[in-house]
Image (cartoon, rainbow, N blue to C red; front, side, top):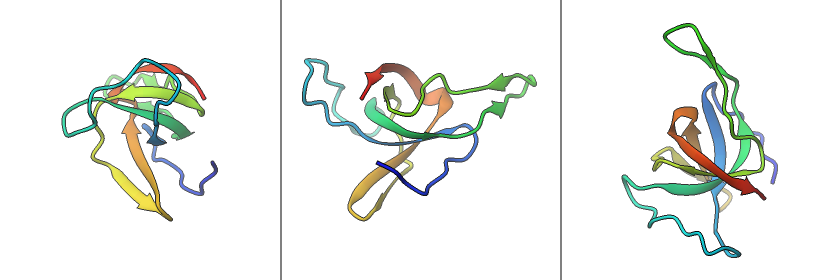
Length: 95
């Protein structure tokens, strides 16, 4: 899936991942719980308050487990979400 949306530095652009082939299932996707998403685009790195460059360890195509994101929107019936680098708990492989 390609998109013309570029995430801001420190953010990933992702779509909700529907897990059809594995026994792993995240908790119900509701406010305050974790979500599973597929990374479409990775924003530029950011400089933290200590002057250290922080990059996302997730890359395009990765399936990530992350904190609930309320930064969701829809374009042409496709749901997208922005996830901050610091909200990623881990990766669950690549698509």
